[in-house]
Length: 243
Image (cartoon, rainbow, N blue to C red; front, side):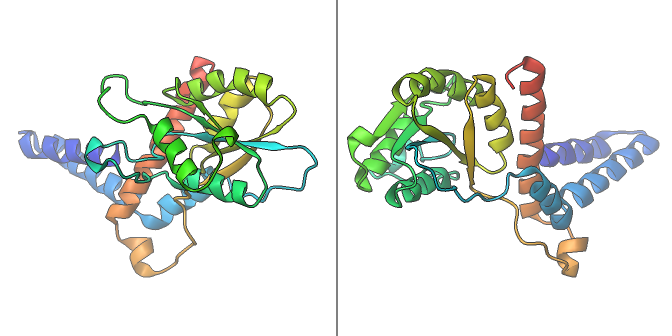
């Protein structure tokens, strides 16, 4: 989004014949670059937005980890038959670590083929399940819900499984830190009390170096995209009544 806005502003400045409008477009592009591309500003926004790291408290009840798909596995057919984790693969990796350490006893993978138009890509839920099987998780401890295509459907289609199969369990919700607010809202809308366990953090340690404070960077533009994308998504879900 920031890069798109920056591109539109620069193109408008290039083709416009009006000097005043050219100037406004260039000023807009400069502001977008210096704000969205500022690593310090972007990092502070993400620190505020992301749900902080969690440590699961001790419990006498069994737990099921609910892992939301969306970047868990590389669904590109060209990389088969090997399984490659995607940009959000830390979600399933954290679920595996929690399982191996005995902090969760079952894993529910929620999500399948995320695309509505493209149907020739791989089933992300199945690929994630295969990853866990290969890592030594028994098949009986993995449940797959592969109908959902977005966060709202993750909660909607997981709810009957959790309420029927895992009614005596605690529900540990595992998704990216920047995505956790929206995910919690969707699951609570389905009357499910969840324990958030965020993964895939974008924010980093605070830096006060001059280049971080003053100069724009490609990484900051990339990070600001995810921040804006998720805030807009959260607002849209609230308006739609999903959370």
